[in-house]
Image (tube, rainbow, N blue to C red; front, side):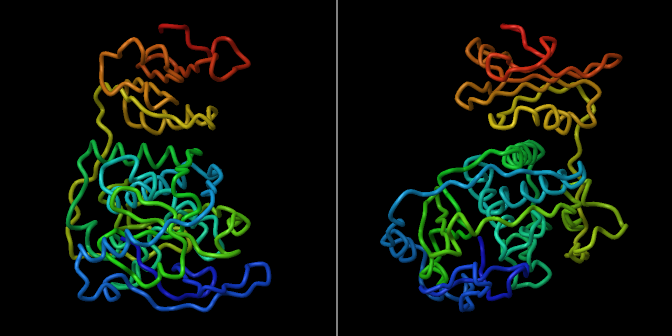
Length: 355
């Protein structure tokens, strides 16, 4: 669940405007209100909250989709960002990819908005050093210490996160910067436009210029902070050395961390959905997924409806393969594209039909 609190521009929390919010062009901020989901919900039960939420209409007009995220940073930054985004998706939305993508889109929308930090981990763990100041509840309620995803769920969450970082857009939630579950009724959503409902989550954007496409112009900063509490899931967030400037303090030190989830060294076959807008990034994604494997075959599809779920691959899935990456001991890694879908300058980079 997401929370909202009054802050200054650029701080690591969210601000909520009144109905007559000034635009960003004059460098003025809207007036703010303090709001926390749990306090606002008070004695209202889930059933009544759902009734109230259902009665609130969706915003009129078309929902403007976000632009594909352009992630330009070092491999370590990419790995940290992917793990923070995967954690947000899994702990906030559960194991379903569509729900995780909706949450991830909100995180990336915030990264592009001047009211929030310009890094993925900075957005996700904003305010997490305080028990009641976090923006994403799982970062300060002990969830990371109490429960961990299965190895399979974590791999899928990371895959979904990487897809979003490589340019996939969850168009249904538009430029939403806030969401909450349908069993609460926080006061801050009264001053926002309701854009969408994805299963049990409702998504909102600010009204006026502060929620318009022109407001989402902040450049991604890179230099993702190391989040030590993530070390139970992420090797790139672990270690005792201090993280980059802006890293958050260690949380929940008294809770022993379970074993980290690391790639197996056994032969692996990875079946993945790929963002059609970023063919040049396919190899990098495959190398990340195959990290630590001596032998690996990565097979990707840009059409989710034709992606295979398991081996052996059905014929319809074979015909629709967009990209493959093969690693075998003693031979160079090999990446091949479907050149009917993505033109390549060298024929040796093209998949043979039926291969």
